Length: 245
Image 1 (cartoon, helix red, strand yellow):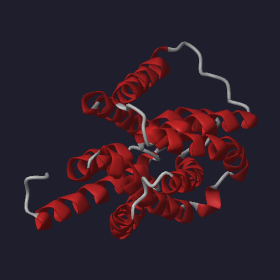
Image 2 (cartoon, helix red, strand yellow):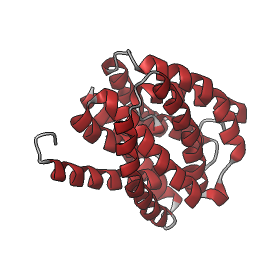
Image 3 (cartoon, helix red, strand yellow):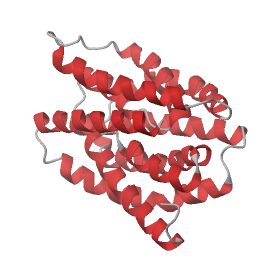
Image 4 (cartoon, helix red, strand yellow):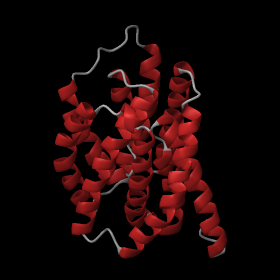
């Protein structure tokens, strides 16, 4: 992308952002895995993660609004308890951390998650509500380093019994908390620049439009098709993380 004229770079980035937001609105995650490679190609990894965080904050906020009547606030509350402190720690670590090995490990984990879900003989028990504090802590710490951990969060939200609008909205609200915490840490470490905020805000309306389109699609999906799409996005995201590293 970097060798293209600036106008074409922005047009292509806008298209990728729309596709990313639409996918995220359908599956609850995967948008960052689609958008991040394009941002890295144009801005580099260190600046791409803060840009992605700003854009994702807007995109997730719109998904919260579109699914506001189906949110599970108890899950969000417990997620927040773990997300805030570990998000601040992760944001500080991001300023100096080597990221390649961790990115590959994340890709392997996502592929393993899909295989495990289909090979296990018994369905896992519903995770206790309080466990979302630990889920929020781990997911937010990794998100501060990698920019995208929605696929890691998905199995836990689904196992709790959240589907379609309830899953999309609750996961999105939890992610909003996560992104706000990360931005505070990025700002304190000077990783969050004015230009990063400007680019993220410019992508915001496109993310909202993609969320709107995705919401219309997910309302028409059966639960079986919905879960199939999630598996497909998990596999693609895992492969992208492994190759990108």
